[in-house]
Picture 1 (spheres, chains in turn cyan, orange):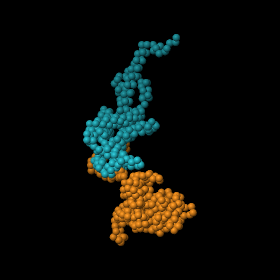
Picture 2: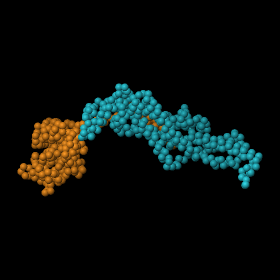
Picture 3: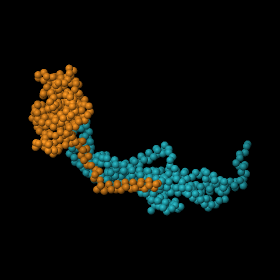
Picture 4: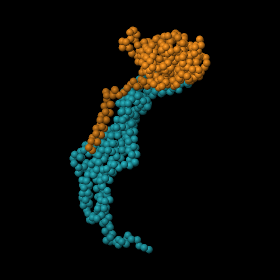
Length: 324
Length: 287
């Protein structure tokens, strides 16, 4: 199965000249990346549904928010992946060849009589030579702009991971959170505090009274819109309950989600399977051979036209401007 | 080597996904979610501060060292002294002492019966404080500072006898509506009958105390250790009176026979012996 072709365009014809082992390895690598990508998007859709349910208590709206958040994640993650792959591809392209010296070689040859087939054979020959050279790209180049772009990319990924992590934690612990919220709602201390009258002298007590009243208000169920998922109308209150109850475990779960989202990103940036992988190499070779092929064809036509002009016109007179 | 990075990362990713999948199941996350944290949070809404649980550990003495038939409870009395050194004493007291102390206080209309009753309840605390003083080889004044610092380290709480006395505004500050130890010293306890003073044991137990409650506890501890001290009062304040120390520049009061007691303000952790205490109408109410 080749899942990579749906997202990254990993088509079988790129691997025509590659051994079966290497080919299946590249399929494995890109299948994995595609599955990772889809997993993260599914997590994002789930998060959108969870937040939608918490805020609106309505399934259709929640699904709509899920699709919306999933689409945003899809585009953003795709952008990150492709930005990394494009950088890798360009590095590879530039490392494998420099076209100017290659073109110069053909200036000495009489290519004006070449047929299309001859040009294609020449291009394929060059492509094979380049493939055999088996060049490995060098990624040591450093530029300040790459630091900034990396920070922006990582920040965007962390924002998505933070949103997803919180939503998933709500999902993991929603039963316990609901029990805690019920407990808060029926707790005599908080109810007594909420019934207190505000005092003139004690601002600390007033703060408690207002907070207690607000907390109970957020836990009151609206008869027209009953709670579907979390029994609270406030995401912040639910978040606070979750934070208090999980303590350091919440931080650990947040870190695990960040790791989950960053893994494909780091993989694309650092793994030679992607950066120097055969798929990107073959894509670069195809592009290089296309450049060469079209150079040969256009150069051949140029020379033909030049020859025609030279044969039928006074070429020197055409190009030298007469003095008045 | 180049394949290792991909393989490791791949496994990391899918193991993380598996962990997340497992966490959706109801069985594997009970240890992560601590409901007790919510109970602690809800306590913040209490308008009356409960006795701090971490300070008072009720348990039965099973050491067998005590020959009488009483059951004992324990309390930790800890403080920073004037040099910033930390002290902590875990002392025992008979179960039911708080109730006994309160009943005795309600029936008492002067300081003496409070002292006489509660000095027995605080026997173990006094003995351990004496032991520490001896171990540290403190002199007369050092021992006084040791005891007084343990009282001054506790934030001030106003204690009034009126049933609707809190919150209130006094000439020395504004006080809140609730009876608890507040770090800003603005706690207020109302309805403390009959004359707005807690008995020494009650103060040690709950740590709510204003000027006369503090002076009475200091008197109880120091008197039982053998110091020549008194509870000094004037028309609206109480301090500790100490004999045998002090010089011509120190504030003092006298007893009915003219004996001098130098004044020691106990309501603030920064107040040291020798700092001026205003007023010239001080007299010894208990010595």
